[in-house]
Length: 425
Image (cartoon, rainbow, N blue to C red; front, side, top):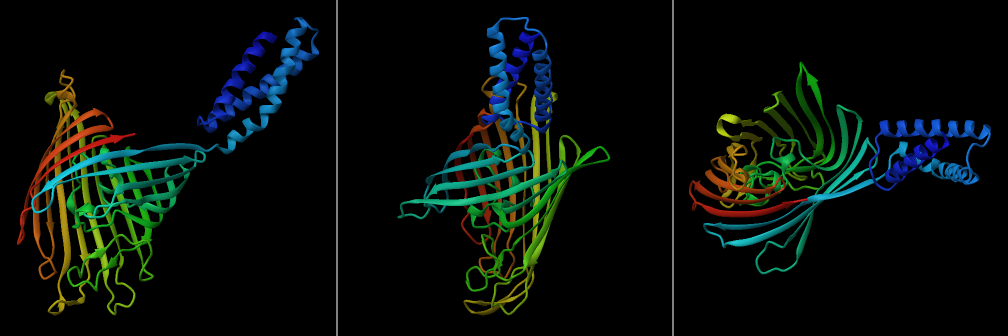
C-alpha cells in the first residue's frame, strides 16, 4: 500500500513541478490535482497509524515525501491564481517591388508578437514592427507599435480590452499578418502603405467582442470606442482626406464602431461593419462627420470534385465625409467627399493532388477598385487586377509571386511585379 502511495505522490510532484515552470494549467487540472494531493495526505496519515510493515528506509522515504508535499503546497495553491506564460510569435518577411514609375526595391520587416497569458481570463498582447527607413538616402531603422492591449475574458462569449488594437472593421484588418495574406500586398483601399487607404487599421481606445450561438449558427460581434481620425484641412494637395494614424484625439470627439459576422455554415462567413464620429481638427470652424461602412464575405471549402481547396473573399468600403469648404491652391474649394473601394479574390490550391510540389501551390486572382470624388485634389478612379501564385513550404512559411495590371484615370498606370517571402513563427 505504501509503495502505491509513494508512486502516486511522486507522480503528483512531477506534475506540479512541470506546471510551476511555465506549462499552462487549467482550472480543471488545478482542482483535480489539489483533490488528489488532499487524498494522498489523508492516506499517509492513516498509514502512519498502522504498524510498520516495511523497512525503516521506506519510512524515511515517506517522511521525505511528506516534507516535499508541505514545501510545494504553497506553489501548488498559487496555480489556482494563474502563472504568467510568455510566448513570442510573429513573422519576418522580404518584399521585392518593381512598379511602373518607381525604382524597383527590396524591403524587409521583422514583426514579433508578444503574448502574456496572466491566467485563463487575462491576456496581454503587443506587436512591434521593425524595418529599415524607407526614404531614399537615409540610413537607420524604424520601430512602430502596431498594437498593444490588455484583454479580460470574464465569460466564454465576452472579451473586454483596452489599448491600441487592430480595428474589427471588415476582414483584412484582423488578419493583417503577412503570412495570413495570400498576396504580396493588401488591397490598396485598406493598405496604409499604399498611400490610398480610406480607412484606419488600428486605433487607441476600448473594445468588447465575442462569439455567440444563434439558432445553431455562430455569430461574432465587436463594439469599440477610439480616438478618431482627423480631417486634413491645411494641406492643399490632400484636403478632404483623413489622417488615420492618430495616437491622440484632436477634437475631443471619439469614433464609435462595431462589426457583426454571421457564419450560417462552416464554410461561409458574411459580415457588416460601421463606425463614425466627428473628424474636424481643433481650430477648424466647420463641424464634419465621417461614417464608414464595410460589407464582406468569405467562403473556403475543400471540394473533392476539383481535388483541392477553393476560396473566395471580398469586401467593399463606403466612406462618407461631410461636405466642407477648404483652402485650395486656386481658392476655396468644396466637393462631395465620398470615397469608395473594394476587392474580390478567388484562390485554388490542389491539396488533394498526389504531387508534393503541386499540392503546396496556390493559384490566385484579385480585382480591386477605388473611387476618389470629383473635385477633390488628386481625384482619380483606379482599377487593378492581380494574378499570383504562392508556394506553401509549411502552413506559415510561404513564397509569393504576383503581377498587377493597373488602370488609373488621369495618371500613369502603375503595373507591378511583386515577390514576397514570409516566415511565420
